[in-house]
Image (cartoon, rainbow, N blue to C red):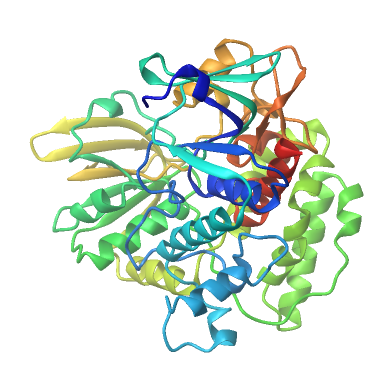
Length: 460
């Protein structure tokens, strides 16, 4: 940056250029009613990729059919329109494509194209600054943003869209392992490089594990794959079939125990009628935030302690083809699941030796060539490694959200709440940082709504 401090001012600053940040920028451009200066801060050279959509590999599929992945709330078929107009998926009829799980790499390209189109038509101006923001300091006229090298910007409004970060491996000394022996599941190229004859271990059994397994298989991995997690539950598949018609509204008045009993009963009833149980989860899907907010604090704690992993595998499902591939590797014995908590990781001449604690105490030491961290998104505010999040918490400009998850925000507007419990009207939050307040806050259906709301209110 060579501009003077006088020129480092904007109407709206967006921190983060992954899917959430790009959706905010897109909506700000679409809804701007007067000339405005919008600045998006993202150190990565390519926008819209973040973690989920950074993979270039075709085996990494969206977990939702293409027809339901529009980034625009008012145009529900927009992503499908993009795929057809751009010929990204050739020779597939529209009605068939709407039900397909397409490679994730197409989604980032879709968001970038829509952003450029909005940029060309808008009265507002969008600039991209390829630098991270290390500090936000609210003041009477707005917010000061501090970048590296003592560069500062001033914004009337800020939208915080930092995206996701991976939990560290839950074992002492893991961060000192050589890069060739410890790879994060979101390092898509790094995972593929591990493919070969050596046995490998994946810590975690969720969506990132599935990504790693299909990537290793596509790269020709021949060794065994040990999957370790506390519950050893694999993601469940999506399904096609008829829809259930039960009314989910009464769930809002029930306790957690009553809700779980009712959902099990509805799933059993659906299966008895030849309807996939998945349709029950699809029926309650739009009510995710309302269901969380209507739980008592005690029941929210019970959910996080006893239910969350079972909820996740039923709620966050994977494409049927991906599930079938993982299941086949397990049937052949190449993939082996272990219900265990990683306890010790030792570097030896023969590789890495893993020791885990299992409920029955029967897990022998495992020797592997490398370990893949697939422990998932870090949701605990005090454990997040993002320097900006740490600064906001340390300076009292933010506080952890309910149950220590994400950052605390107002329910309706997503306004950041400071350490004294006061909303900060100049700073709004979208995406995964709102998980403690809303729970459902990571997927595109939530992101697209939050992005539009934040953009309208920040430029209104």
